[in-house]
Image (cartoon, rainbow, N blue to C red; front, side):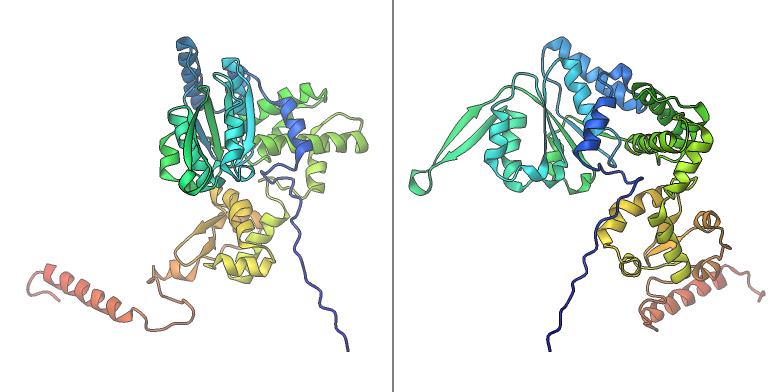
Length: 390
């Protein structure tokens, strides 16, 4: 008897509030809405001032801008800033990404085509291979690349000079960058999440560019639910615009906005179904935690990397969950947001236990050390008591 075995493949879900890009179509749409100059940029005031000073100083000396490393969550404008820097110095920007540069020849081909002062933008620069990084080091410092010709006894190195340029690297995980690579950037800045006021200004300007009639309260509602990310704000604006065209008269009002976001299952805190499922899993299945991320991923049927890179960052930032030595734990904010009764963790109510308490059912591990510390603690208390007292 023949039996067919079906392999289940978990397909990635389309998240409206996901910070990553949905593809080339969304990139083209966002490019049309990007600011072209520092004066048009909304938010990140401290960062913009630093970059503006560096650009003006380099332009006055007729030199290329120092290499810039931008790190932070996706969707906050790292690519936009690379284009703005190129526009401010009147240079051309060349865009690539780390995974696309698999060989040193790929990078050399790009570097030799650069003109004086051009901007080379490498997205996800932490994913560059070690071989490509070795080609990039002399290019960043001495503006030259070394190419090895032939092999074996006939091998020789040829040095090719290149035009001075500005490298703008973007990464969402700066911890994966090697030390030598980080040290070669003259400017390293972190991009923060945007506040609702800045997002409201961005939405107001983009609504005019899209020729969408939108009320102020509706844009404020979108700004509050955009998770501090302009890319998500623009995506929600497009979804609400479509909803207003079909279900209304084309005008984006507050009732239309709330109805559209309710249809998309995005609540007042910007959480979607996956975020709430994560919180309910920790609370209802594992009693609020602590619970390991592997257990949560298995219960939800998701990959661990998906939870850590896509869902957890926003929940951690807004104190819905916390990370402890024992695992993830839901906070009182998460209980209140889901309308559940707050139950303090048993370990917190009874005092902090040791690292090995309630771990895999192991009992007695480390108990001897705890008893020794408790005895020593009591001895110190007895030494402090005056004589003649109990």
